Amino acid sequence: MATTKKKAVRKARKGQRIRQVAAIPYRLQEDGSLEVLLVTSRTTRRFIVPKGWPMKGKSGRKAATIEAQEEAGVVGKALKQPAGTYSYWKRMTDGFIRVDVAVYLLQVTEELADWQEAANRQRAWLPAADAALLIDEPELSTLLRDLTIPPGDPV
Image 1 (cartoon, rainbow, N blue to C red):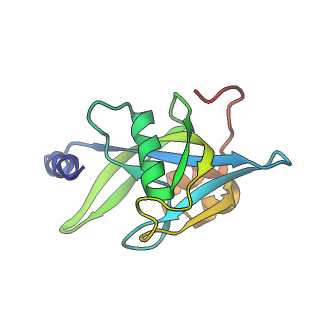
Image 2 (tube, rainbow, N blue to C red):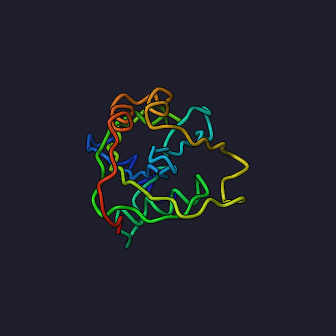
């Protein structure tokens, strides 16, 4: 993962756009209402969605699923097509780089009591509209606010 980040920084310094993948873990309540899972970032502790660098040999959907398990401790099935995209400025040690993120919806089937980054992150299930208010990235906030789950099987 560190090599991918270094590669991305080199690309960004050359003026190229760089990519990440993210998951919006979701669940439907008995009353049909939608909740999404946010996690805190490790450094700034603000609420974000699980995201990371693309993984060699894995689709964006698969990489987003892995990030959701590592960062949020959830397992599930991601929809084949991204729900949308957003861009943000990623804080690096020596400045900021612009990142484009493809976002996949992940229907949560299991919530783990212990997971890889449990000691570094908090998670919160919220109605999508409330989650949108806590997100700093305007494009991601809009995506959450307008979120609808397509009918049918997620895979």
